[in-house]
Image 1 (tube, rainbow, N blue to C red):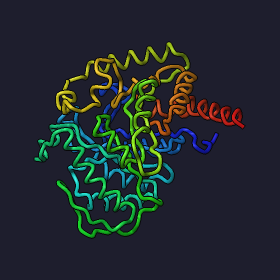
Image 2 (image 1 turned 90 degrees about the vertical axis):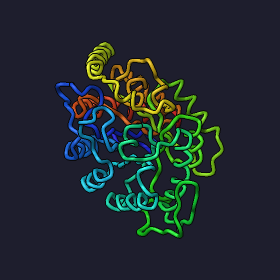
Image 3 (image 1 turned 60 degrees about the vertical axis):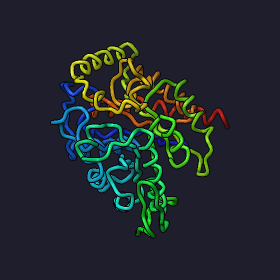
Length: 357
């Protein structure tokens, strides 16, 4: 069944560091290669997924010796290999002059024929910044930097001539051609849950990414963002989640416990130790057992196929347009979700439309 207008959109995290969940899963050993990421996204497109997110890391936040995908070169290649799926590449403003980054974005936008978006992340992993020799600004100052940087990038991605200077970055009469494919330019996805992040999202983002959390907390966060002043088109919302769906709730919970046991074996503490203590991402679900990153299983998409579908519909009613999902083993569970959960969601959407007529 094809998605209806304003239907839920589903995305999949590309395995930029090779896996989501446990790095010792016997059926999903780490593979951060470009070719594996390409395989995953091409398969996702065939299965009916609508988007993919490719995170950006220069070094792995989990293991200093581990491979990690380079997001922007991979995005260009995956854009050429696909025809429908939206490709969203993360970007840390520290790493690129805004004019150079905007030029790269318009290039991938051309390759993808208008299917490219950027996901701004202000930076949170301290060892990465240290090893690159970058100044480590405090948490709130990083958002001041991002605000200046993003104003320039947004103007350039909309095809404007931009002259802007500030405390951190600036350009003088810069104009980029060719123009982006979509009216209004390349869309900006934005993640961050601190007060400075919420202010910046309300002012400049197109889509606000929420880390996995329960429905009540998600609803409250959406209400907070919508209450803020805004001059652009209405802000849209996306949710990160790790999915464990099975025929029965008991089977899903058993798999959850199994994955938790594998994750516990591999937890070295490097990720937590290297994270800026002011970052909200690690505080939202502190102390709660979780599989996956960015909230993971705390979104509650663990249960029977019907339960997961119903929870997705409830999140959609709260305002979530896009679910960016993680699975393990990735390909096997992605196929399971496409076969058993997406059709159930579409059936419920159709029933709601018919009831409203």
